[in-house]
Length: 105
Image (cartoon, rainbow, N blue to C red; front, side, top):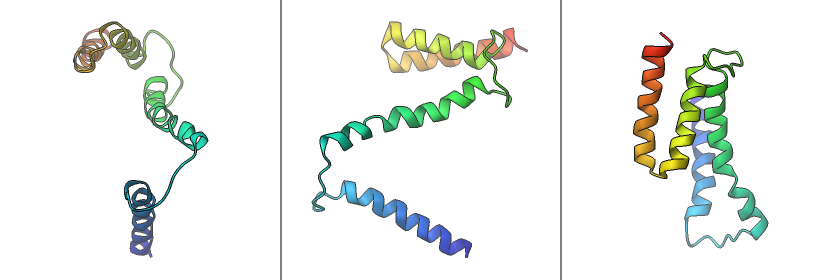
């Protein structure tokens, strides 16, 4: 039963992607659907990062003792000021490492 469920989920995921990627399938989305789909990436990314930053140990933490929150603020400022993705990633990872190892240990 588990193998059947895995195969069914695999088929569903494959065909739901295949419909949009195959150029011979005559599927055209209207402007409203395209506009709605433009919000999917930010929504998924927010669902990933928000619990990590605001719930680091399973409880809401919006204080200055939360290294995840401080590193997120530093990262947002770096991205805003530098507009360089690689530099922002390297500096924000360094900031998080510094906060975790030296300030909050």
